[in-house]
Length: 233
Image (cartoon, rainbow, N blue to C red; front, side, top):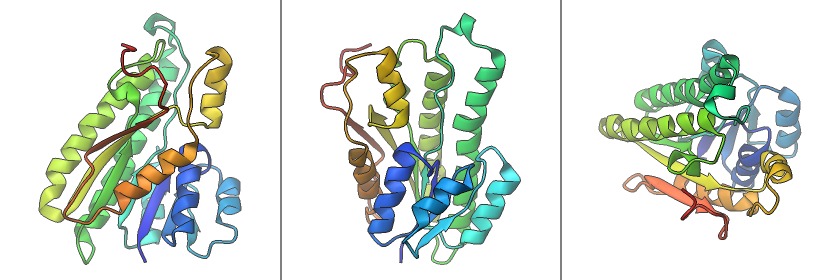
């Protein structure tokens, strides 16, 4: 049975992806801060493993990974947008929070997955980082989020390079306007925002995860067809 750990599994893209992998028969480690939604998601699935943890808590994350065992795939998904505004309007505490989750948390999860995949037998695995269209073209008033997503791209490329000797592949999925609670809030302030069903993002992650060891989706962009990405810069 293939195994995957998904961070940010309690809601949005992480929840939809976890549910799809469970339906496909994978053993799925569910990581998020709150245990209640993870337990609710796990109901009816014998292969679901709720592992409540904060991605910024290195010790808690290590305990979660150590308890899970053999790992084929990490979907490094947890992240937050932060308070919108121009750089002079952003409180430094808000900046630090977004950095800690979107970069620090992703680094911690990738580090633990890389270590597990390097040492397990058979060696190897796959790390899928959740980037964003903002890794290429920012939204207005998104300086914290956009900065982190550019950093994620650097992390993805470095993991791809450093993972080669150990059979560890790394790819990045850049998702545009999947219909989640976060996007619902955005649509309140930006009427007419074009979205797609979140299941399209989940199926794309599954496609990346199911690639044979000899192949890797390095970067994938999946987005609402009519959203203003091309030409929005």
